Length: 239
Image (cartoon, rainbow, N blue to C red):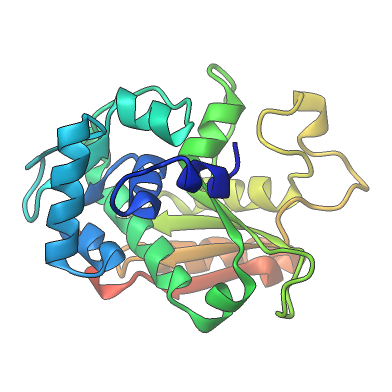
């Protein structure tokens, strides 16, 4: 089911925000308010979702409460994700990736081109269980006809909060950039020499703690380094 069909099937307040929340595993209330057009609108949406059994909420971390989509809500959205409360160990990362998505979606180029944000949850649902590969935090698919210089490209997005080793980060970057197949393809098709790369570039959005490692890892890539973009995390990205 496409995003547009998912939205049109939802006769609920702020249907786009419900699908967004489902895609991101969950969302903290201040981010939902920014997405829904203010605190009042967000509170009304959550109240309606809870009444319908489509969402639940609780204070899982410092700061505002979290909202996530239930099994009934996922079914209504046409999504086959396993229902789950956001994992406590991943809350900081979920918030950071959500902040990156919202910041990118607020740009003029994004609004003009209307690309598809393919979230990690969608990638993981296609990828399957038991296959050991690195999954990006998201992909951004720019339409072929988009009025931007990078029309037709697919970007991998990585939100980096805490530094890995330089060697590990370099290995992940190289794996992303040499990949040719979609996630969930046969292992033999994942990186085929001579085929076009799946990701035209990888966008690394980093905390101050992680940016040094990311820059050092990029420097290890040689010619591939030109396809790595490094940016700062949005100010409101931290938990």
